[in-house]
Image 1: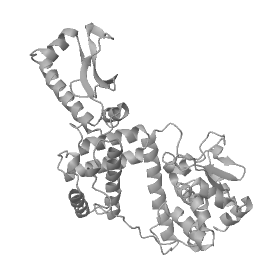
Image 2 (image 1 turned 135 degrees about the vertical axis):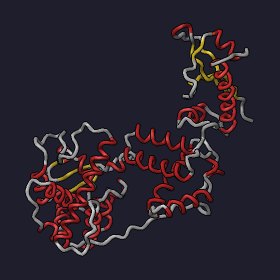
Image 3 (image 1 turned 45 degrees about the vertical axis):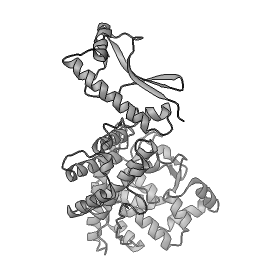
Image 4 (image 1 turned 90 degrees about the vertical axis):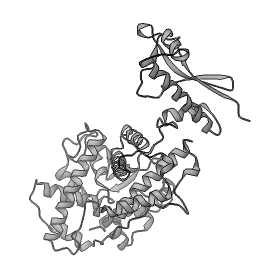
Length: 414
């Protein structure tokens, strides 16, 4: 049988504030141990009263604003009771998670509020791209529910299928539907992990709703296509030259994506190699992944042509970022350049009569993988070069490849 948990709102007279007021705390007693917690933010903040005011709120029949506080006090205490009762194996850590990890209680566990909190968390973690996606999901769901903020238990298998159908009718792709509903699945998993909801409410998994997987149709690029792009002669010092060269640099450097290229510094270069960590997986991988890229003569020429000066250890290689940007501005700068590269490389493809003119900035990554496979490069090494393998797999397979082997493979790209 679980030990009894008692709770109350308590005027903390140990610390006097201005005008003889004291803060109100949540007081929880469990297994003869008492802990105090701040009241979660609400519309009646701040919870600070004189001893007389608190006496009236707790025992009297107040009027005006004190009456509002009395009603809110009753609501918070009811919320605390429901929260405590919902925790199967009570602990102060689990209780605190209910107050601070999302700020959710039984009275505000609604879809929009949860997503708003996730957006704030992503932004605080400088995950601007993920925050932007979560905001798009929130805006989409507000349209779907016609601005009514649904309780979390309303997000059922049936409702998710209705949402999918609604999105498709609005012209969204299956890939977008999949991206949005996968984020909702992560949200549900986090709520269950934090014991904010029961697993019985989980609408995903086998036999329930499955986020769709949109399949991209990719047209392979061949070495002859790469040669045609290289043969194109843009005017020196132009955006066209810079964007074409960045695309080629990505292709020559293990299909490095633009965000990683933007973050490269001269300190990433040691002897004839670039060493870097993928920005995309920097937070998700607890084991540090270092990707090694041999710098071929052509890649070095691109660095020499467009690299910033001076070539100090802490300076960015390419003039994309200056180090003053926050996460959101980085996302916007990289996104804008990504679009510009895609536009320019498509114009070049059309001018050079390539069969596939729907090339994007990200096509360089696909081309690296595809052409490397055509050349007979081992799949394990391609996977490692793209940053897809674990450190254990990396060490196992790279043991058989010397530095010269790596240069041989890299030089076969042209």
